[in-house]
View 1 (cartoon, rainbow, N blue to C red):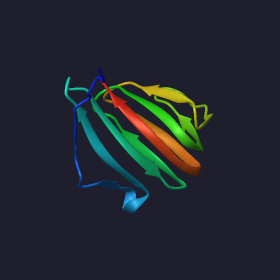
View 2: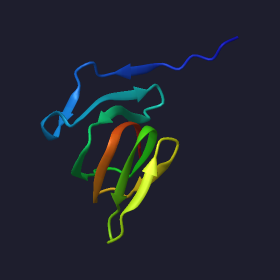
View 3: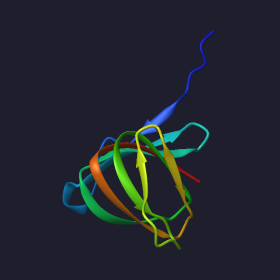
Length: 103
């Protein structure tokens, strides 16, 4: 028997920063929320509502997390966490494909 995962996907894209970031929202049957998207090369500041884990699928960036003055390099296969109600800076150096896990 195969387990089925039921998900709801918002087909209208979330477009931020004049198209430099495009994502689609996903909600799993258990209420878990995620987004899947792409960020083009740019330096951007994101604000969080809920805590987030950014799972990087492919690409490269550097990130300055809340409360830090240091930039940290990340690439596909890595992830980083951001607290809720915070802001973080990201400089994408190679188009970034990601999954954002909320909560």
